[in-house]
Structures are given as C-alpha cells and as structure tokens.
Length: 121
Image 1: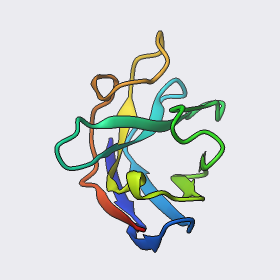
Image 2 (image 1 turned 120 degrees about the vertical axis):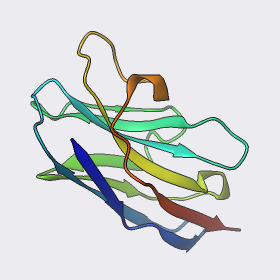
Image 3 (image 1 turned 135 degrees about the vertical axis):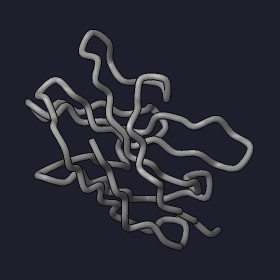
Image 4 (image 1 turned 30 degrees about the vertical axis):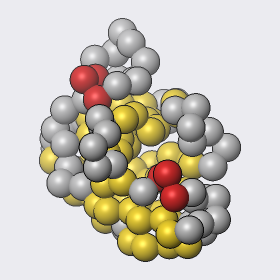
C-alpha cells in the first residue's frame, strides 16, 4: 500500500483545513486508514481512522467534534476549530490488523511522507 498526503498549510487559530491521503495498492475491507500526527519533541499520536470496508470511524478524544475523517477512493481529514496545539506533521498510514481498535502509532504501517499543519495564535 502506498500513501501520499496533501493539503497542509498555515492557518489561524479557529480556522479549518482539509487533508487528503491518496491510497494505492491492495486494500482489504478490514484495513483501517488512519491519520496520525507528530509535533516536535513529542511522540507520534493517533488522530483518527476509518475502516475501509464499512466506513466505521474512530477518533482520539483530543479531536472529537472538531475533526472528521471520511473517504471515497482517497481518505480525508476535515479539521475545524483548529488550535495551536494541533500544529504537527500529519501522516496517513494503514492498520492491517482487525482485532483491535486503532489507538497508537504501533498499530500502523506503510506511512506516507507527511504534510505540515501549522496553526498560529
């Protein structure tokens, strides 16, 4: 599976951005495509994921109600009410195991190169 992110940028606090992840390769219905982010000096953290076959979604508590993940042939992350603490490099990645909910970076592989999101005060 090959993933390419796009859509990052600079936005003011309270603003919105939409990230896209182009997915290519063989995807099984039980795979999850997720967004994770890494800020400087902080371990990469899970943000949101969607299960490919049934569009079930799952979010980190820190983004619930503000971010929405969705997909067609690509996977999107709509980010609203952005805060400075959302500043990070955002990566999409694949979770290929089906017996756990996505929650940590260890669950994911086949990382994209990432896209920078910067939220100014």
